[in-house]
Image 1 (cartoon, helix red, strand yellow):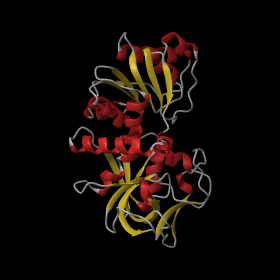
Image 2 (cartoon, helix red, strand yellow):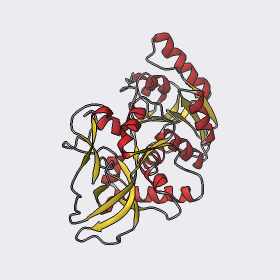
Image 3 (cartoon, rainbow, N blue to C red):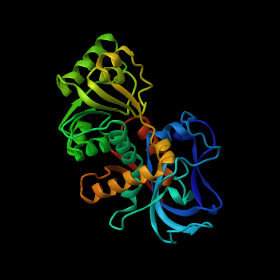
Image 4 (cartoon, rainbow, N blue to C red):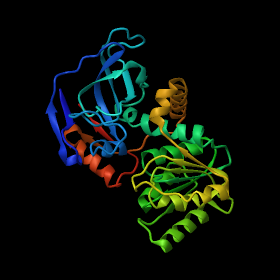
Length: 332
């Protein structure tokens, strides 16, 4: 089989398309013929050894996939050869075949394409855990979403509207603002590119405050980090919840006196650990996502598709923050 492998630490230019023997499923595992794999920011980090998960090399990046069951390991029940599945793998999806734990697989609805299926789980499961479990967002409340045109950002926008909240999308370009508005955001603001000096930080803070209004944001969804974090926190409501989701702009620093003055919570969002620690709760969230998907309230936005040999270009686009929605690699 073919796989796009990381043999050394570095960017997407270090990835090499290679031939490997087909893997075999062990007890409790499924052998999956991969049909599509979505690219996410962790794929940028994992090949640079900057992610919390550090698989031994060589390995294929690619953290989520869709495909068909090709073989079952010993003891697997509830699955058959030919079943269509989606799963989050952490890594390994940029390959023609991969072995996954059967417990990590979810059934892909027949009416959905492999490309759509590959683009759903990681971003939407992260966002529903963030917004519902950590943010406790309620109807009528205000949520500010940074990076609102990326994969997790658009998912947060859609889920916020499904929960009947007021959603303010913060993005870095007019094109991305349109994408967020098309996803249902009540308002979109365009912030400048950082880093910021002291005056720039004050202006960014005021931009966020003006957007959310004098009462502040009940929930702030931050998958961006960097200088944007403190500026966004300054726009939070009394007893608001600040959700720490990711750091493509760098790890932000917060003056803790702000949390005291607003009596607010700063909440980490680590969906992978949540799913591993509480699989029943995660499965319930996935069921809810499928329901919202059927109702048309959420829908993965795929802005481009790539072939396996060009998957490195997709990872580069994510690294350069040029992407609206999701990128998908088709593995034919």
